[in-house]
Image 1: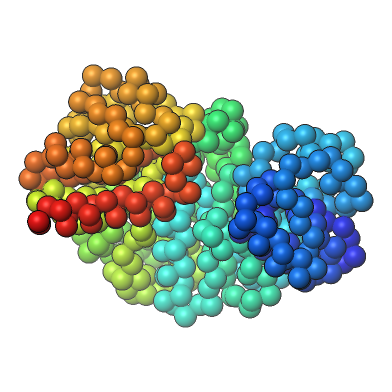
Image 2: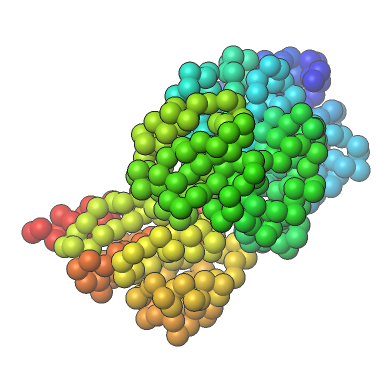
Length: 452
């Protein structure tokens, strides 16, 4: 991609936008960043970037920003229907995202793209660990806080990238060697309007793949299975229910793969982070590793060593015989259901946050069966209460400290208090990580006061 001496406008000065701007500058472009936020943090960052020759304009995006621009690069999450972008299209100025920009500059690297509603980050890191264990030069990137732009020119043999729907909205030529769609359940419908459009956007990950590439899909998933007809790549299936002629599957309690021959990889009971909600992630990672020819013993060792990631069904500790689990990354109702299915104790469930257009009533049967009390907080608490009324006792609280204290007060020995919000965090927290850390901090404080 030739950007030398071109005027390029980058919208958004977050992690992705900043990485895109530096990459463009390195390639000889004249870079301007437009950033809506005018905080002191952004002003400091703007001064730093100005020292590198990158101009930054903070505040609302006037249409005048487009004057003289030859390319627009978007950070993920910026809606495509804002007035500035509507004007951009009328002027026929190309619009691409940071993911697409970075892909244009990748050369010999083999790229894995992993998407789905839930489990993307776990699968991305697990896949990276297996490949690294096999001696591959691997770089983790994408929607995990490491923009793909940062991997350009770093000499990685394989790049494993988590890819979000927001990123897929703005691809053009982006095409991974291996694409993997883990699952698709309703999420971000406040932006994507309807589930059909959301499925379409997810399937864009194999838009440009060829017959020399691979697509990994879950054959058990009634939404994913039909997508096999939309990709030109060779489809490799995973399954928990079916013994496959070719692919990775569960047979009894054993994970097996069948390509040139059938091999047992590992028994599920040996994996410490296993659980019903993680099995598809594991099968997908094994499938990706298998396509790179990784030996079964290497895969087994990596699975035995992997401990999972923070804020994903993470055991925080125990206070007075009550177990506390942080599943703050569960930002939609399907993630909550997946976590609840793995619970073996009576559960007090803390839910709520910023609504993304979810239908929480889809979890009614599971909540009736598994949840002894609901603790609700955040903007969505009234909606959740209305949709789940009559299933379990409900308490509404103002913040995480009150949620933890009320849950513990009502819990009995051998119960579990589970933070699995089913919502975004942005009403009260910077992100799901901060929400999870606040939950863990309040559990630690509770433990101290309990001992006094």
